[in-house]
Image (cartoon, rainbow, N blue to C red; front, side):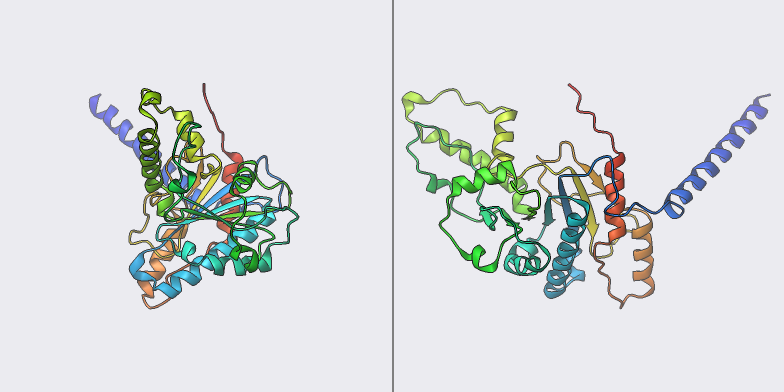
Length: 322
């Protein structure tokens, strides 16, 4: 009797394994085609983030620059067709930030002119908390150093991006409220410095702000989550994306690599849907690279992957809780 139970259990395990294998094959190779970009979906992201991943030894500087620019140009076109108004493109090495002028020149051709009076590229400087009214320190002390985020809006031109001396407070209010014109499109370029180094800069600026207060007005130090959220996602910060697409520009070393964010800003990912094609696409590209090692190993963001990401976001359920 004991052997009979073991045999029945073994048969059930075999049948369940076959069922899982068939389900996996169906989901990978027999899945239905995603809906077109202009299709009506239950919801679309208002802010989309694109993470471009590359294996540094496999791409030279010129190839990486051109590939990232082409991926950005495609992503902007897809977002415009799908009705997404804000796109953030992240690469860990900061290649796009160094090619900021080239990005603007390319997007001048595909972005329509906007009527928004604040539609100009503006660099957002290292994040700092708002100074208290009784602080003796001027704003200039906290706005020195390297920029972390650069923004381009539709209607920008090369001449506009070169202008300086604009009203910073007005630009910050514009970034918080978003473009007033529904046709305005916003592109943000991010790098590794937008993530953990920014959080470290916020901590340092909080300490400096407390240190420069008069001794008679210094209170017990305390920072709440809402305070940090106001700093990191407020007028001088980076708002949280609704959907993130992780795209490998070069072939990963592993056949099916796990999902990695590659130092993307962690604070803004509390409720972000992440799309990562870790099955068919990686497998085909990995086999192609092994069979033809001299062939080009980089791939641009495809419209098919973009549409799949939108369908996945449309069917996702977000439960905020209490």
